[in-house]
Length: 445
Image (cartoon, rainbow, N blue to C red; front, side, top):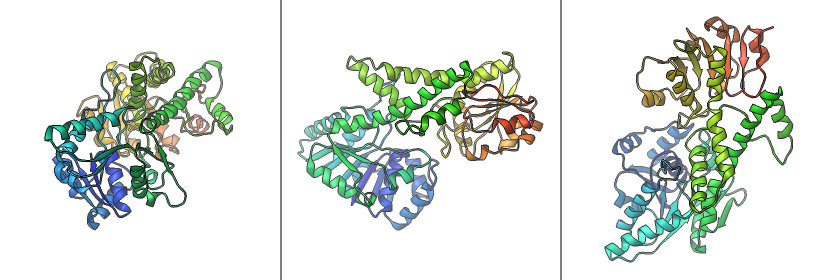
């Protein structure tokens, strides 16, 4: 099938390359000519395991192309995917200007039947706004053209997006037209062979499903972080509590790991947007507000532990950071806990030495060159001259370090583990004080 994707960011690029991988002819449209040139040259503007090879393979096969020509995009595809950003406004609402700009563009060039697919994460009612924008633009042109707008939210985990798209848990399609639903079912048939994963529903239910999924996962994280603080106060071990409650099949083990807060492009934005949508309708979503408040507070926990350890005197001290991305297998630092910690340290006159396997360039883009930030070539080099080590991202290469080497390189033998990835017994055996989340401090005997 011929497919057009508007937006070549994270969602648009993964969607486009995976649809091309199974034989569709995909044209990705983006307003950024530099990004289009990079992609047409075989480059990839984001880090996602396996993405660069798949882009190159499908570009070479002629199934995947990139352009800034919006009119060509509208002519090309029966399916017109909208996969542009919906950044949060200051009040927490989702900014739909880019989504509606694409709708307007489609309306300016459409001349025969098209299926407009909302892939971006958008508030309930957005499909109606997209349809109205296209209708208004067509009326201005004096042209009649048929189209349907459907909701087809993405459920991609950064770091595992290719696997998620190629082997989805579910494919949500919100449509009021049974014919359109069957066309989407045909498009997704290659991803649906072992059993039927397509779930057809009304448009508004599909739009809400995406927000509900992310809000539920964020709620589980904040709940565990709330429990971790209680565990510390009462002298319990949150990791043992986690295993105890996770064994209950009604709860399960997924998304109940305590830590220093969630970040990324989805959970913070989507929780706020859903809470804002409820508030705009006169409903106080108190649980959603609490989830966000707990997460905001949790991002400050590691700084508090560091400050307390050094008696509140952090000016002139240097803290080593392992991990800058909000999670492993991505370079995304949007609302990452590392940023909260670094900015808090800088505010009191401390310096940072940091390492991340893939997010170094993103850190430079965000903060530029500054005298209180040193980005090192590897994790051990970050320790040199540092007063202590803080772990912010649970990269696998950080899970089994040489504790004796860490002890020798640090000025003060202390680790602040914001993800509970290390073995406290091994750390203390090497002479290190080990401070983690939801557990009592572990000190050398």
